[in-house]
Image 1 (cartoon, rainbow, N blue to C red):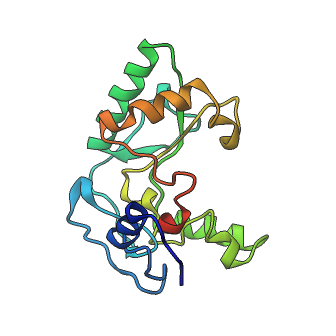
Image 2: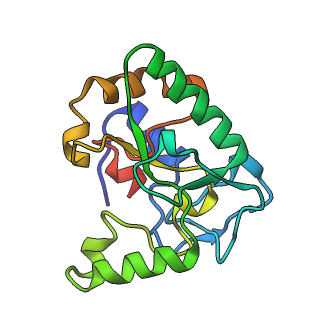
Image 3: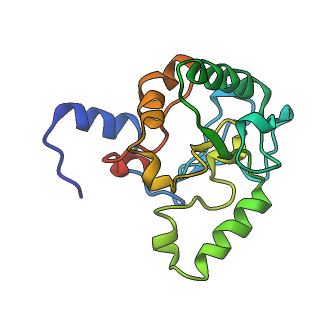
Length: 179
């Protein structure tokens, strides 16, 4: 097993159940949890579809057809508008994904990588936080995702997203927890 010498890291490891095996030790997600619904390698959504999905305005997206749960969208609009008032412009590239869409995406990745590799960068269908309607990928049209990290816009998000109820879901250096 993994040796953990830092007490904070150990508590984080235990509290997040990072010792469990993703896609093996999972339980069904609580789809009645509203904005607290969790999907990850330990929490399975099945074919869940949020009942309050809304379309995101063109002003906030990089491509057509982006949807979020209504509560998440209201908070996101406020965050984007506040950022823009300070001169920071970013956009959603993708948000809600159905089980079938995630399956097609995951299967397309399997054409070039093994499941072990794909599991490091894509969720299996039914396990994606995008399926909750609460998650979105944010970037800028002129930057690839790995380039967005070094922008002033990304730094603004890191400093302010929590004020609107958002977190960075997969922070660098926390792979032992986020899988």
